[in-house]
Length: 395
Ligand code: AMP
Image (cartoon, rainbow, N blue to C red; front, side, top):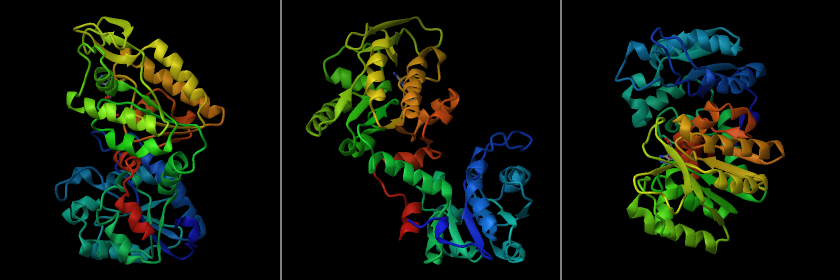
């Protein structure tokens, strides 16, 4: 795997694809600079080597050139985060960009205008990619959030740097973390799979079954399994057409010696609302008119032991409707169990969906070994897919 360490950037211009798709307020002020901060280690290393940095990114989903999506709005924030002045080119290709890149001196940083001002970016246009490629000597991809897209700047461009392309630190860390969980893991390995639907998680489940010892199933997915096993699930969310699949998964898990842990009790509510009445019920006997919206205390007690004994933990998807305070307890408690296991030496990766939002919301992010930065990209990696942005660097 080619990383920054394979190159000496001294006197070189690094063309870095970053993901600076940051949220802006009504006055075009950056409200969350996480993504800029995430790219800082890569940029610092190149500048320290004596290289210069050309940053390219998208922002939002503009239709052609749209002032409100201009990356000029984030120049001052980028300079503040990086601690160095940041120059700006009002176009990402052509004369303006070429002149700015040419004038760039070692130690300097240049930010190019929004790549998506050109439709060619998302189309993966080769000629457009070639124009971008002219700007730098070494191509660095550090944009994990778009690594699952075969866009011009994330994938197609790599062919113009056959020997001068590598992963940035952020992207390398994402790949390493997933590898540590699924390929080089210390046993026992536990996957916690929650979220709303079996259908959106089936490829993940099938891909991880070969690599884990325990599978904890939670969230809305639970009820398709429980109904398939003969339970009464009341009004709980269920995919009737996936019941056979749920049983098949259980059979496969058994054949592979993977222990499946389903909730035994749930917090049932008489409405999908924070104002609902609730009761703790047996997961197989949810009364008519009630729906399971969180895991219950007995289930959590059982999960505590599984998590405590795990050496590697993957967490994808919340255990309940954590967006509603009344049903967040299960997800928070599970997060605390994983934090505790991590403190005791387990490796924990949170990624590929709403569990990342949950971990952030409940302040658990620093207590996990790694929290992925790319929702869709991590989900596809968990599904066992090769991401085009990653393949383009490896080829
Ligand atoms: P996903 O994007 O697949 O990870 O699903 C996350 C969503 O699943 C969150 O918005 C949760 O509110 C939802 N969810 C979790 N548990 C339940 C449940 N028991 N019933 C309905 N939705 C749920």
